[in-house]
Length: 67
Ligand code: FES
Image (cartoon, rainbow, N blue to C red; front, side, top):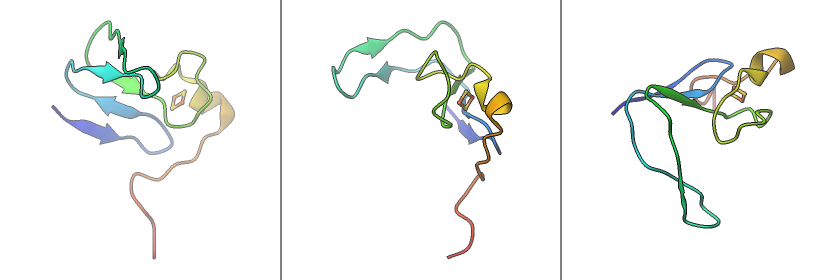
């Protein structure tokens, strides 16, 4: 499995895997792979990306910048 950090966007997960709710420990159903996990906080379908990052102008680097 591979997770790709997309610039100004979500985390793209390449294969099916188990996604858990940290508060309840319950499994969150994943319909298909690949799928994208929101990292902007604006999705109405968390933890999955729904494209809201684009409308919100989310800016997120792929990796830590500078020191
Ligand atoms: S990263 Fe896409 S909606 Fe948050």
